[in-house]
Length: 191
Image (cartoon, rainbow, N blue to C red; front, side, top):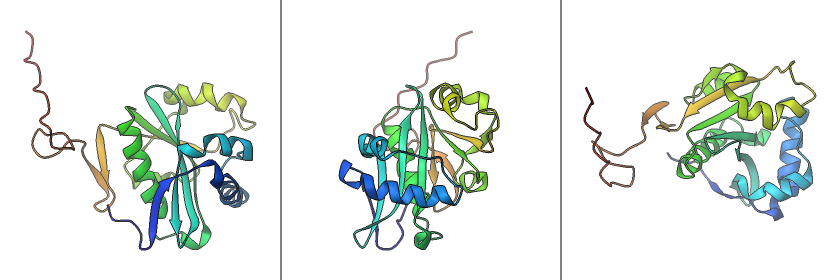
């Protein structure tokens, strides 16, 4: 996938925490995100994908593990001046690649804007399908049982082609892995 012009992605670090906090806080005021503390962002900065343009952070998103099988896109935020330039889609695509590489089976997101994620291959699911999220975060949230967010999930056995807007097999051409290695043959059916 091609990145927006002039935008590069990198892994966040603790030195980015104040800038991440400011970006997330600006989106929080618009009602898009849940609050995060500066201490939390400093500790977890290396879980963030950061979008940079002209040495300025214009977007971020965290890959937050909820269980050995499920990770969450958390604190996806794009600076108001960079919206509409596919910065968020680029960040989610990179988070999806990292989640797959780290062995997660599903990637989820909780959002007030489900259409944004549907265009990236996510599906709306009942909150109860993501018990990992409920028991990790939701039970501590002041909005628990009154949540206005949609639970979204995408299986990581398919890759998302942001250029074409749909899922493609998470393997290379005809029986090969993305790195070109042959996939193991499927076992013969047992009768």
